[in-house]
Image (cartoon, rainbow, N blue to C red; front, top):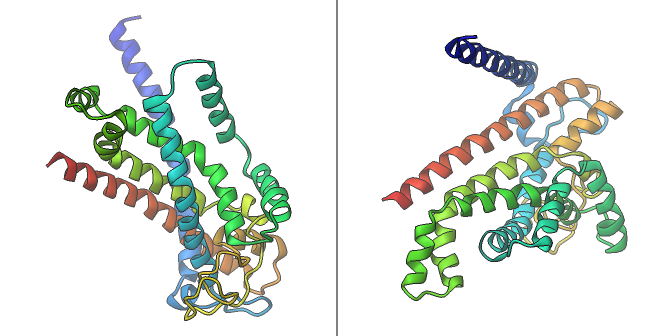
Length: 293
């Protein structure tokens, strides 16, 4: 067969598969938005959920989801960045490093329900955290570490090697080259990876059922003391996230308008995840433009 015809045929097949995948994803997103957006309103976003009566909202679940993302990133970003710096700048190419990379790959393939059960046995029972936001954040950190570590390592590896040589040639210690040259140059990729991982953990449900819990206590949004049991900032309180709330509505169905609330919550969840992805592109481009100036 003529090479040009083979190339056009292969290109057409690849484009066909890409179009099919894009159509499936787009159809799913549009369906969720079309069925859920009619139920979304300001009252829906700012009112508390109702257990047995219609007309409840997702205020607490929405706040819990964002708060849990912040707690998870506070734990996972330093750990992932430290691991990425070691693997990219300091780790020798030996069997131990290969085992460490294999462990990261295996950890990324663990089902979230397995991580949730591990979190329940260790964080909730063994460490006596009970069902809490902190236990959920630690469980999500286990899920988040492989993805974020690979993102940070990739960002560091894409920094030109000449920048390392220039810093070392000026007499800078390797640690100063890493912290003053490598990390700032890789910051756009690191921030993009962190925001994308935030979008992933925002929609997580299975791991949180066994760690953060399936119910929320009545909290005061005017109580800013994080050590108070009724404070909305208390990380040791049980908290139902938006994804867990959707699962609970569809499995228990105790609320009369469970279908409508579930559809509206799913639409809000999709919009939030899309916003995380768009924010990652915007922030990454903005930071990269700043360092190019």
